[in-house]
Length: 219
Ligand SMILES: Cc1cc2nc3c(=O)[nH]c(=O)nc-3n(C[C@H](O)[C@H](O)[C@H](O)COP(=O)(O)O)c2cc1C
Image 1 (cartoon, rainbow, N blue to C red):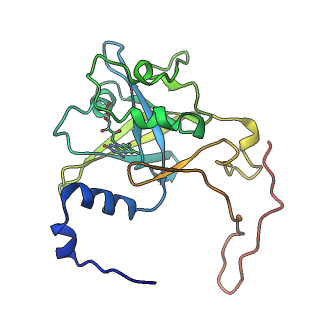
Image 2: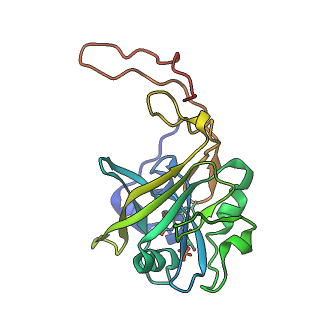
């Protein structure tokens, strides 16, 4: 195996797009979701994001990163305006449409209409869900963190609602993402379906983790 090495200086010297592709893919496989929002006038918006991180379970919090607002950021603006949004897992059946939502459509164009994805509205919930998604989360904005290092913004939110196929939920609360059809991505254009190797038992010092293959989905 030939090994190539890069110093910090080498990385900074790379062509901008090449560097973005290179560094972005180093983050490994990412969670892939469509964020649904609506502005104050009711105009819906949908955009693909891959920077979700679990923050904590009590209360149920997650975060994601928005790029610097050098161009209009509809998702960010709508979230700050209405404080409500949806997170919808992507499936193989519509990943090209999900990718297409990253195109820079004008504010008055809904990416739902532009990509053929179906807007699903739930009573009492201002932001639109994606009907084609199997795992759908309703979230409430909690905090905006400005990352001074590079102008990116971290949005922290609380999970207020979850909808998913019953058979994707394992008895111990683990969500079987493959059963729900959720796919993943690497970098900004590489989409992947996954295959679980195994779940392992809780790790304890001096005990070799065992396989948890006898846990089955179904509630
Ligand atoms: C696979 C993929 C992942 C992306 N992840 C992010 C992300 O985590 N943060 C971000 O700011 N933009 C991300 N983008 C770019 C946004 O989808 C794109 O800027 C989009 O136009 C934003 O739409 P909006 O202006 O309607 O919010 C991603 C694009 C792709 C293709």
